[in-house]
Image (cartoon, rainbow, N blue to C red; front, side):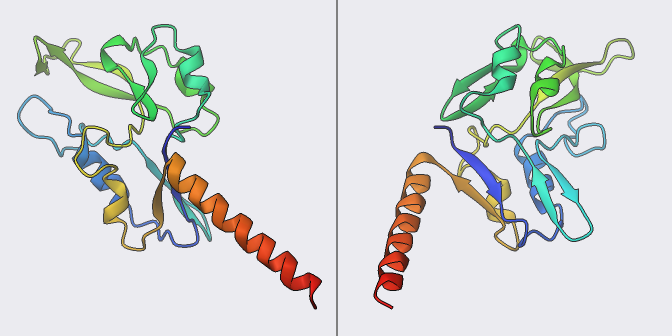
Length: 183
């Protein structure tokens, strides 16, 4: 089972702090050393705000991920208990975005890199690539969105915590059944 981030919508206030933390954890150089500009603000999650509920939408790190199954270049792979994007392999075909049942896979314009240096020449300065949550696998401390949430609405679920949560619910359910049978 892959790890993933869930949100408790009743706690989320839609402040967008998680979105900013995500963009800061994955800076994109605009070619002039500026990483926080409108053209480079590319968070890997999107807050959705409704009349009564708000919550960020991000990759669910599916075990049998439709995006991985349809990618023609194997740019999406299973690695580090999650679904990871190998950006160099992505051709921007958008098949993964169409296949994602949660709308968490996006396409983003990123600066073209030549010999490892971003280039912003007028012709062909940007290319479209897949863009998704990677659980901040290359960021110390894990997902950057979780610790900054002011209401603690975001939680990292991993196989061990899921099993512990299920065991706790089974015990509670069994205790409630026993208690009801003695009444």
